[in-house]
Image 1 (cartoon, helix red, strand yellow):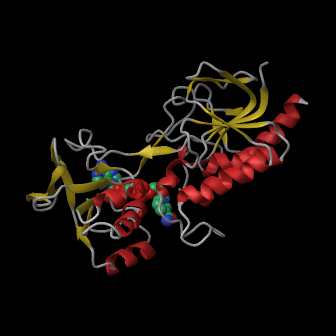
Image 2 (cartoon, helix red, strand yellow):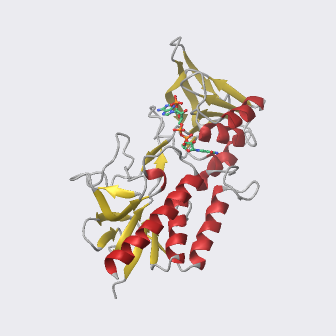
Image 3 (cartoon, helix red, strand yellow):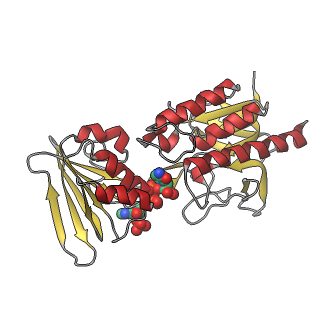
Length: 324
Ligand code: NAP
């Protein structure tokens, strides 16, 4: 028998999990659909979360989001693993079609599909992904024990994860394209004090080179000011490269129908988190956007969670007013 949900949430990161909690607790029949087996989204690649209020000390992203999931489940939120490949968001009853062939139906939908790591775009990067090139320090830190590591990027993620990698690596080089970090001052200070971290400023990656047996063996860097090109290798050992240069939103499925900015982030009404229809520019009733897939000022677990809560409450009101 076909189930009609009050609310379906796409994505089980902090935004989706928070929406699931608020939706289910608001007595809506709520389903979260997530393409990965595990919940958590991108934050599950973070080794330690220091700035989520009330979070446990030294808690990882995986631990925090597992607690969030349990909380939503306790209120009756359902979960399904599937990848949505087609959406009808404009009809009154929304239909989401999964790779599995299942058609999921709902009175309202929250898009909380998050973002994915941006590539550095250097030759060799794709070839050596998983063989020396990584986008997740928590996942792959263990593999760089006693190796020299290069972290690309100057934001919060790059600098925080560079600090984390000093637990394993012999030396961590942070390669940044400017001479000032984007990361928060508190994170910068910790990194500047860490003797295992070396900063390579005004520098971009030209190439990542490898060998079929050892994996990634060297990285070619270019100083943008002087034009000097330097190839670094790990001597008789491989090297590790962590590309942590920001995110691209997972909005491919919606970008022809809904309004997105030049970076592909969905634009939502700031008050109601309603998605906007690109054909008319008007709010799309019953469809909301939460978390890192939308354009906003601050990309944090707390703001993603807040989005989820707001979107679920607005959707509850919409369902009450339009279906009962
Ligand atoms: P981000 O803030 O967008 O920073 C990306 C960094 O990579 C920037 O330093 C950028 O350089 C550099 N970059 C971008 N494209 C590049 C390229 N093609 N080649 C080389 N370098 C490139 O991304 P993020 O650090 O992943 O953070 C994403 C969001 O999550 C942010 O809002 C951040 O505040 C938040 N976050 C917060 C925490 C925390 O609060 N503890 C932890 C992690 C992430 P430029 O600086 O020159 O632009």
